[in-house]
Amino acid sequence: MSQDPSPFHGRNPFEVLGLSGREDLPAIRKAFLAIAGRTHPDRLRMKSPEEKAQALELFLSAKKAFEVLSLPDKRREWGERMAQAKPAPEAPSLPAPPRPGPALTPVIGVPVASVPPRTPTTPIQPIPELKPATASPARSGPLPAAAALQLYKLGMLALESADYARALELFARATRVSPTPRHQAMELVSRGYQYLTTRFFDRARESFERALQLLPECREARAGLELLDKQSGRFLKGR
Image 1 (cartoon, helix red, strand yellow):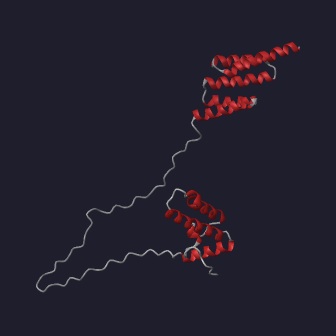
Image 2 (spheres, helix red, strand yellow):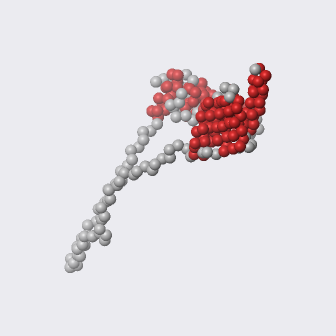
C-alpha cells in the first residue's frame, strides 16, 4: 500500500470528515458539505481573526479530504488503513475466583468448636411449571363509527364522480354498520340519482323526498330534486 504524503497532520481523511471509513461517495460528499456550511469563509465575516483562521484550516482540510476520497482507489486505501488502525475489541475479563481465607491454627489447650452446617430456615419451593401465555383476542377491524365514517367519505367521492352504483353500495354498507339518518338519506339520494339516469322520474322523486323526510337539511336531496325538475321538463317538451 503506497504511503503518500498526508496533508491532514497524520489523520485519516475519513477522520477529518468525521466518518467511520466504510462510507460511500454520497455520504462523504454530505459530510464535507456539512463542514463547509459551518466553516466557509463567507459565513465567518463577523468572527474574530483567530476563529477565522481555525475555521479556514478546518475548511481546507475537509476540502482536501473530500478531494482525496473522491478517488475510488484512495477511498479504498484509506478505508483499509482506518480498519487496520482500529484496536480489536477486548474480551470481557472473567471475575477472579474467590481466594480462600487463612487456615485457623488451633491453639494448644483451647478447644475448637465445630461449626454446624447451615440449614435453610425455609424449605425450598419447587419452581412452578410455566404455562404458555395465551394471546388476548385482537379486535377485528375498526370501531363501527370509524368504519361507517370511512364508508361515508368513499360514498361521497363516488357520488361526486357520478358513480351512483358504487355510491349506493357504500352508503348501504355505512347504513348497516351505523344506521344514522345521514347514512340512510344518502343511500336514498344515490338511489334517486340512479333512477334519474334511467328516466324513472317518479321513483327518483320518491327517493329524494324520502331522503328529505329523514334529513331535512340534506343538500344533496334538494339538488337532486332541482335536477329532476329540469330533466323531466326537457323530456316532456321533447315528447
